[in-house]
Image 1 (cartoon, rainbow, N blue to C red):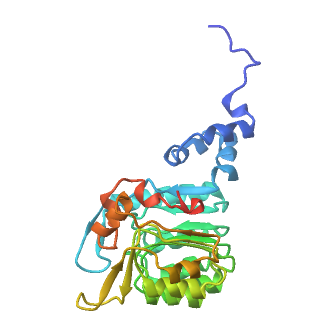
Image 2: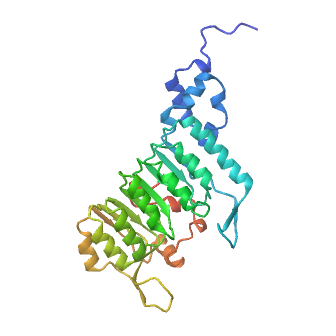
Image 3: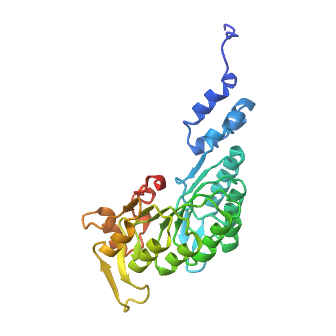
Length: 307
């Protein structure tokens, strides 16, 4: 056999920039599969910040069953271990360079997993949160205190928003952008007005939205520039028992239009023929995202919030 030509370059001799461009073609599972252990040159390339601006876990869902007691879900141990392993490898390689962190809405993260991640993402600017079930108040507060650079958040509905938004107001001074994947009533709207009046972009889509809450948002969030209420059920009345007075509003009335006229963008859709509007009505204002196409929960009419 002829000797290998000494002028032939080996993989490990490739310029780091070229290796990084190649590794950018890999998905997260491939990038964390062990290629960083091939050689020192590949290890350096695997740690390049260009590969870790975004940690996208939106393809990873927990294997779980619902249970009657808190936290109302039981997550399979293997599913938990898979997530922990992926987080440890990714966060080790990223070397605190992650700016965007995206969780799947059906990824049931534990307190330990969340705080471990938060401590290793101090520069985080955008966060898409998973389901809350296994995250306690102490764990969430500890995580938020690590994210002092946070600007944008997508969050599921929450029963007790004041503590959460107060933590953001206290520790995230650049916070400007919020997407809520759940109902918005007067309690939630007043919490927004109290703790994050500096919001510039707000998306409340595919959910139940009370007219009084919408008016409070328009009156109180003086810095708001973009408001998306597409595919919402707009309700006149107050949350409570079915016997209480409630009325579904079919069109945006002139008072709301006038208050929204100061915005750069006021995005609405309440069309009978719109599939997304139909789904919101079918689910009675609390969309069961798991029932629909995988891309459905990632959509948003505000380009900056779409995934």
